[in-house]
Amino acid sequence: GAVVSQHPSWVICKSGTSVKIECRSLDFQATTMFWYRQFPKQSLMLMATSNEGSKATYEQGVEKDKFLINHASLTLSTLTVTSAHPEDSSFYICSAPPPGLNIQYFGAGTRLSVL
Amino acid sequence: AQTVTQSQPEMSVQEAETVTLSCTYDTSESDYYLFWYKQPPSRQMILVIRQEAYKQQNATENRFSVNFQKAAKSFSLKISDSQLGDAAMYFCAYRTMNRDDKIIFGKGTRLHILP
Image (cartoon, rainbow over all chains, first blue to last red; front, side):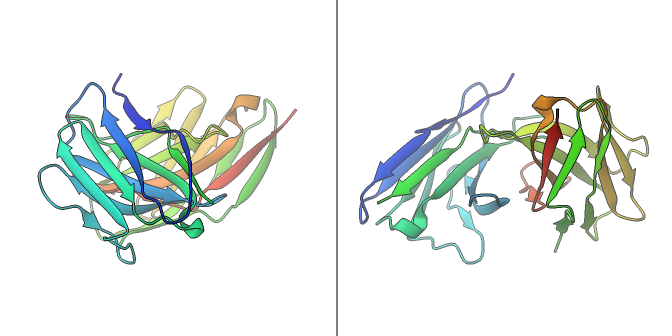
């Protein structure tokens, strides 16, 4: 079945550095991908919609300059957390809808820990 | 704006028993999709069941079934013959008919299975 791969699964970085998270659709093309953030014991909060070949659409309250999204190909979207701070520590999940199916497949998530 | 409400933060059920998780939603759309997702400790989001709003018949998937009440905007999940592996966070979710639209999640219900 369709799979969405997310990498890395866990990353630890120092405060002030940037971290890139990749989301790949392994066997289908995705013109749209979604990035979510999940705090412990909470629900998924949509951060932005990644659109292939155009700018991402950010949800209200999400800093565009801090969370850079690039959807350069039909199988890859990246989320870069710039100048990370401890409050950016969270679980980040991506998802993508495969063509012809009214569902979304989710990546396994990335745990970001900023020291 | 569409919203999804899960009023039960936590629930417990004895192994082999039946449990029902509640979900209500609000939308002005007449056609849409509703989903139940499971998030086990691994945090991988797993689609449990989905319902198309234009279908009156309640969706079923093995031990999982829904009670979809469109007029009441209610979408509950029934788990029969509960198993230890069912222990997880369960999220009710909504999406418009647009395949590339975002999924809106409820806050989740943590389900405990008692041996």
